[in-house]
Amino acid sequence: MSLVREPHQIALFNTEKIGEESFKNGRLRVDKFGTSVKMSTYLVAFVVCDFANKTKLTSSGIRVCNCFMFFLCQLLSVYS
Image 1: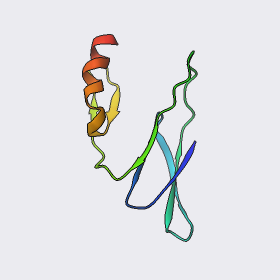
Image 2 (image 1 turned 30 degrees about the horizontal axis):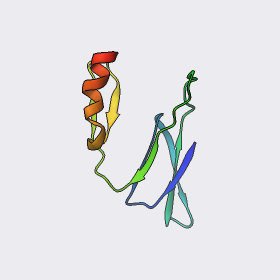
Image 3 (image 1 turned 120 degrees about the vertical axis):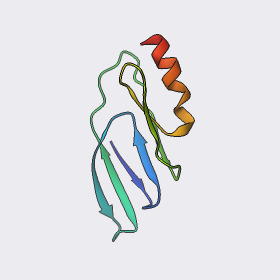
Image 4 (image 1 turned 90 degrees about the vertical axis):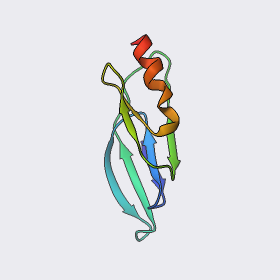
């Protein structure tokens, strides 16, 4: 999966970012992400935004990004 964004933005996907390239003479960036694991019900999550990038680990070691998703750490800790 690849997401195109402006340089001041960040892109997030449900896998780790594996590369980044310049696009349109540096006016844009292309973020490349790894292959998602197979799931019985396929869920895709992606976002392109200008939020500050924050991360937090759940008690089981799952990394959750961005402040609007921090509540997931508590939820995932209960169900993991």
